[in-house]
Length: 241
Image (cartoon, rainbow, N blue to C red; front, side, top):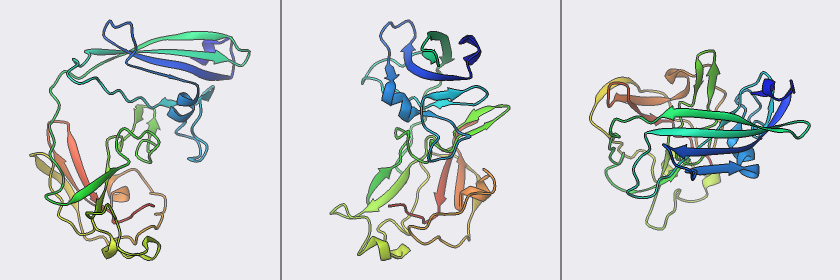
């Protein structure tokens, strides 16, 4: 992409639009500040990795989330149109990247809890959450293993998540701690781990030594809900403010 801009070593993302099938109106369009928040350099420091400036020889991921109008047909193919600019201000259209949409019907999932009220936090639509920031890049491609992860926080009838001062709280003070967790779909247990001591609340965990389940998930259950579809339940008992 950068080589097309007169050999420049830096470029800036100006616009990305996503179209469905042969539509002329984009399903979503990002420019300026939108791209500053959605363009992420996974190799960079987590405090400075976002921004639409791209350097030669680096990887940049643009987080895209599309919400379709109710009862609107799901597109069979998505077309991504990008515009980038060089350091001298010249602009080029970087061409169209096309992605086929999976035709199989989506898996319908149930609630992961039998009772209680729960706040869905850091859901898949929140592109600045730590889940989307967990991108892995290697010679085979780019993955975001936690892209569809959700943090559920139990709350009482008043919407309170913790009893007393959360800054001095123990695990048992949190409404959702120790509650029963259900599988969200029928399937077969692929892997599980239990017996790790619960982490205290509001404590930042050390950096994982690897992206494997045993190094990052804590106590967990992984269920195969389809030939290549997995659902995971992790129980870290770590709460962020």
